[in-house]
Length: 90
Image 1 (cartoon, one colour):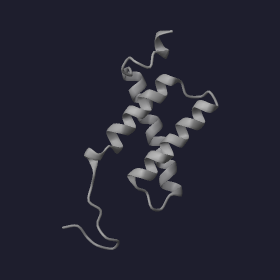
Image 2 (tube, one colour; image 1 turned 180 degrees about the vertical axis):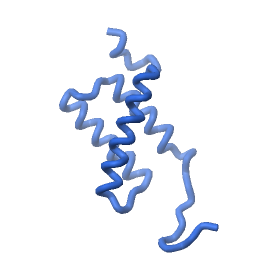
Image 3 (tube, helix red, strand yellow; image 1 turned 135 degrees about the horizontal axis):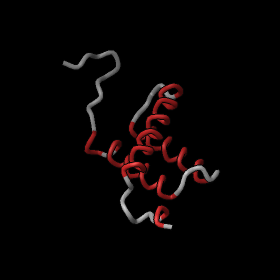
Image 4 (cartoon, helix red, strand yellow; image 1 turned 135 degrees about the vertical axis):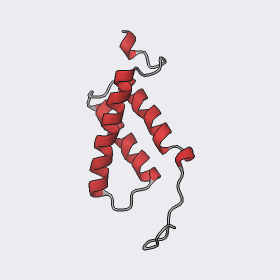
């Protein structure tokens, strides 16, 4: 079927679903991870996707859309400078 073709770019609907999935994962992670970093967020998203695929609740197309979103959101181009704990940025 055409929707299972992982080579074609994600559709607009698949991208929207990936954003919704990302936000759900982010909210859950913010509740349980006090020291959230780009690395821990990426690892958590990979774990969620692997679990969803293992249980058959995420298609290869959904996985691709979420991986592309993860690359854009958590990529090095979005790097930020972290201030020391308790310090204010000016």
